[in-house]
Image (cartoon, helix red, strand yellow):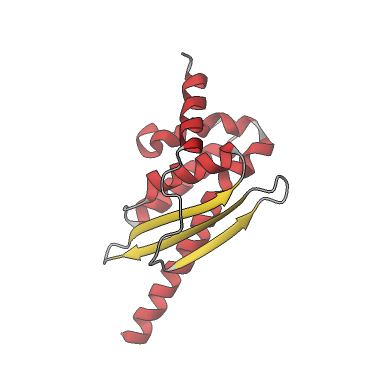
Length: 155
């Protein structure tokens, strides 16, 4: 089995058996994103727990296998991790997928996410892979801002 075949299997597995699917409560913020090019849609909910802002993330959506698998991998990579680490993983995934095949992925940081390295060669599919990650970044930013506002109000 080639590396490309292995990556396809990982994407298919995450697409058919998505981790973190179903919108969970409680949550601090949610973001709904749509890819108008292909019709993929995803809603991502983010919660922040504790002093180190442990991320909780859940998702729901419909779309192609790339989009569904990317949401599942997002959940595996950021759920129950400190916000700072989750954002590092977001940045690494985004850089890899938008790098047009020129970015060597950090396998330790991205785990199953490296399966999306090949997507970078297909510009039309990049938006599919990034859709849940953009929703995550938006929801995480709103959750962090809301938490900061509450701290200011409650001093």
